[in-house]
Length: 436
Image (cartoon, rainbow, N blue to C red; front, side, top):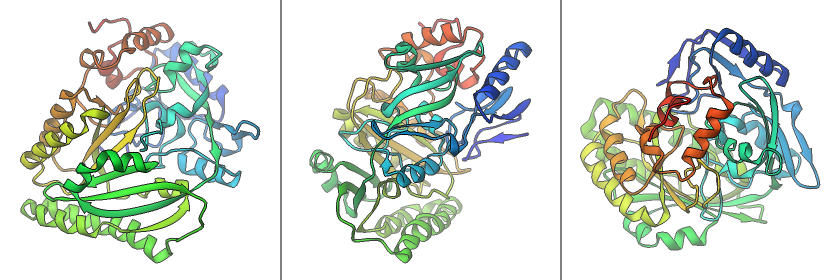
């Protein structure tokens, strides 16, 4: 059975595809792979643009049964099957009066996929999704099952929260949820220079702030989300359809196709789209505000840069976009996150700003992404593990203080490379090799 990711830029034909019902099935697959000398890759919903989840031998889908969800009412901790999609989890939590404190803008990923690649969302005082992990159940290369936490196998726990799928197969994840809450969303278009001039204040004044900038325009679409006890104003079904489906997907798909066919029209198209970005305010369940449907397919690159480098990074990006984004209809997305202590987190040890660039599916992206990557890497940027980049173990080891420790742990847990693939060999080095 062929496998491809959501964007369609990663494809393969694994030798086997196995859907695991429970942990025992995962153990059986891993032991069988060991016996046959094959590699295993856990696959989710395919929302990584890199080849991080490409299964070269065995494609394994971990348990996803929502009936396996366990809720600890006193602590608010929830244990979920690793392959449960976030959109299913969000609804299940809400029905139990709970929610995750922060989310990315897409909810199609599985829980394991989201934490393993470093999904982060936005909010200067909020950390990425993996920072909410309190325990993990993982099947190791020898087929043993390990439960790890801050007090059980803490070294494995620390690394496996963002483990890239390199340490084993996650089967269950325990997350710290919070009481369900609503968000007051305010979406407005502002002059880009005004946003940049007041950026520190905008980030500090809002729990969750982000903005989008369309190349070839001087307009930024801002999004401010803050907790509220209010029940309204609400967004009606028509307004939701216009914002998410018509403008956010159907019309945008048409503009992307037009821009691809006639690149000289891109600047006026972008100015038109920037002016048509949804504006207004509404109150809704947190997960409905955090996430939006994404039906226009694209490829993406994202870097986390030190928070203090954001203005330098954006200035360089705008210059790169002026030269290389003549046919790019997708906006640049800018978000923020607090520092954490996870070894391979893009926010490890530093408050971070995230800059993401996108290109419509099938369109050339190499020159644009390459120019932007040079800028962001030049200010100490770290690439998102699930989004396109050209970094290797030799360059990444200088960007992560705990890189060598992670690789040493990987080599100890998986010396034969049972869970590796070409991408992991590139960014971590093949098991047993040195990148220094």
